[in-house]
Image 1 (tube, rainbow, N blue to C red):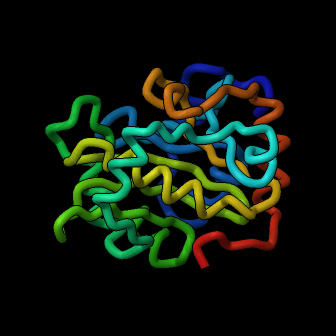
Image 2: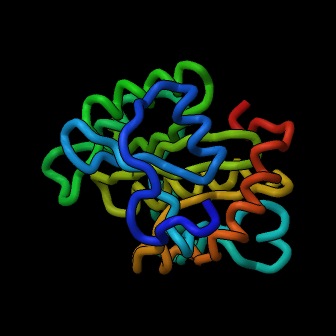
Length: 212
């Protein structure tokens, strides 16, 4: 794993059964389809994370909350795990560019959610779902998979509420896969694969559940 391809898929094929998914995330891999019938498993180097937990608070890193975002937060209501599938379908809207969330992925992650390993934050405005984020949680580790918005700042609001769940979690690791300009503007940073895997091995073994 340490010397795997930094850009392309590390493994091709396999299934999306709960055991396969959990084993992959524990090993530093995440799945994305590379064709209608084939899955690729990635482990980018460097890896993007959002600093969370007491260590992030101590060095003042982590999610950036601008004044405009602070104002936006007041008009939203946030919930956790109230409509996981709706969040996934919002993220998988076929009209979104570069969409990759297939029905197979929705079925697989809904099953993982029902087992208590996948979670969502929903953002509501005037009773309507306007944004959200979902991912996989193992101990102090969270793998953010995708987010969406139908109202300005709704996906950012989802991230704010999600990262706050880890404020008191030691050794927390919040993975966002690849660094994009948007994520960088929110406070995401890159770490090399070796450091990521070392932190991952500690995080997944923590006896905590931030979503409990």
